[in-house]
Length: 458
Image (cartoon, rainbow, N blue to C red; front, side, top):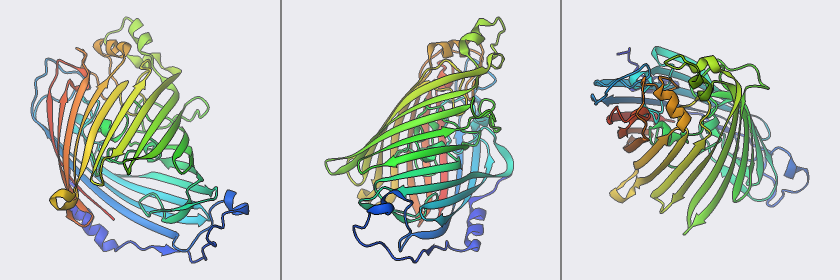
């Protein structure tokens, strides 16, 4: 087991630093309805109540355990088939500042420590969204995010943007263009979902925090350099992103060949009311060009086990996704995701999934007098293409999978959690995940994963 940094120590440090300070720009607000002329197509002017700067912090500690399970064989990327417990710790210090009208700069300093089960291998819908492939026994630090955001108002009705970790509180035109450039997570902008989006407060599984078939651009820690543009209208939004990609599969170093190695993402979002309750549907498409290997070419070689690294060249990978959420009442919401990728080239940044479907429900605890508590239940089916299955059966390895052989079956996951408020923004959670056919292999599992989480933020 690695040396431990406890949530208590992080909490003490945060308290010593003091409470968050927020100042506001004191320029007068425009007259009601005054959105014509140049103001309608220029960066938003600051109004009374717009934050000049803010800072936030969060700490999340997750411990997970799985007992031994049946396995006919194991390979280089297999989940260990004996009792295992692992924990992860993350601490973020985040700050933002308003530079000029409509412009914000944000920075996120991340400390992480720990490992996922079996060093984050052996399950495609991995149980811990806080676990990285680059685990560490001692605390490590990095600048996870450093970015600039420019908002350009298009006039008309305004809405309040609340203060949070990545936004300054402000009043903005509902009709607006938002430009973001710098180091971010592609998930900050795309594939968001009100009920299944953040493993620090919601479901922990990788295939529930994001669309499992979107091999989204990211380094080993989940962040990347890129640019995004968003057009927001009263009932819909359109988004486009252009991001760098890693130099090698799931690597930290980025490919410097900007014109040959990139990912483009588009998303259309439709917001609506159903029975007076909000809902949204998002359709996502992506195209990646990177120095990736080909499953077909690897299988043509006589070498066994197959080695996909010998077939790498600049080639394309593409996919689509559907993301839906619907509130049934102020306390109950349901969600679903569907995803598909072409499945011809190796997983490059996220996982090895080519097909995914998930469905779940989230319930707030108001009915049992615990309004800040949340109960969640969801199921996931993850799969791969036929050529991808043959590749693993021939001994190939991917980002998370590689048992040496493969008796293919859909990876089936059930996750349920209960997140409970301990004090103000301090929450604990208990989590259970059932994984059948881990890494698409009928010859291994099923696996039962028990977890607990402690999270605070301010």
